[in-house]
Length: 137
Image (cartoon, rainbow, N blue to C red; front, top):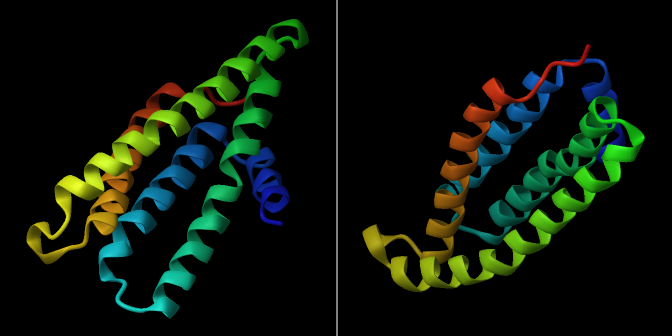
């Protein structure tokens, strides 16, 4: 539901600013999970995270379609999908290790540590993306 409005904003803005800003917001919302103490907060958190994440994947596809020739695009999209699948495969292993290893550290549950660490990593990568992503011509 939120992919289309996000892509409409992306088409009218600079991808080098919009996508990393989306990532910074997404990471910051993930870090805030430490402040959640009830079911209502968790539902609001997941809903907000879903709205923010919704525009990323189609936004990357739109950006790639603007920069690559049609004969190059299929290879880039295949690489992006493959990277997504591989990250999902290894992300579960990382998540399991973090949750188990960080459980109770600082009085914070392991799953909250997972969101906070992944959120911080997302923010750091997003800052780098500001400098790497091209602006549309």
